[in-house]
Length: 351
Image 1 (tube, rainbow, N blue to C red):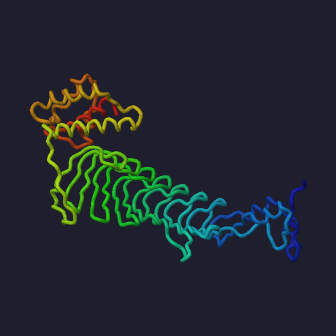
Image 2: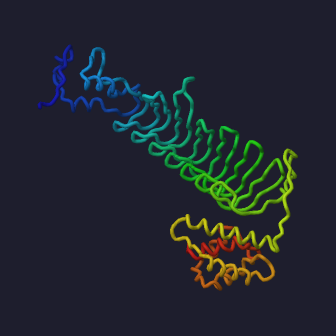
């Protein structure tokens, strides 16, 4: 098949310095975009046209292509680059910086609603995705903080539609790590999250009763811990109830053991390489802890190395010091049994 050509007619056709015919490649070259330009419209296939054509239906008044989005702004090497505004076929609009044809830098994205355009994101972009610091507004609420690969990541604050507020760490779009969740009824949770749920050590403050639950959580539910009066206040009197007194010989020791076992069970779902201990191992760890603790139920930081070594664990150089530095422990600080188990797990795993 011969190359498509464009025939020039009119006054230009007799210009001796201009060819009468131009091939498609030459036309494409003339259409290349560089620098600031006025609005550029795109055309997209008309699905209805091709559907009717396939069914041999009447095509009168229909076109194979219809207007798509439009872009007004800067170009570089035939790609959007610099500042520009893109209106999409859905009615959504992005206004901001571009690089190599993708949203990149600072920019704002709007979606079309029955009432007009609504801002859904303003902030940093990287390679076409939300990445960096930004503000996102959806039906679920308003988020201010970090993004990575188009999802919430790092530190951020989410104000939910029901009035709840979470501020803390995020990963993969969900709450992950240390955070504070404040509920509309003034209840508050302060602790660890995993897979967007309360998971790990944490405390829940009940505003109506003036009570606090402090202990371990798993999949948004308390596993084991202690229920006690809130030192910050006695509640507002909306709800009161009496708790039966514990009759255990040593409730703190029982609680410490339960918390340690809960954390060890959780290790089964942690990353590969994390040490996991059976019942016999846990009994040996408890015995080693009690031997180092003496009459107390805590071990001093300065005695940790000897206590861990007594369990037959070979401490890699610098591992214990790194762990203690990360948790901000001093030589004269006390380490509880659950904390001792956590440190043993890290040291045994070499992570």
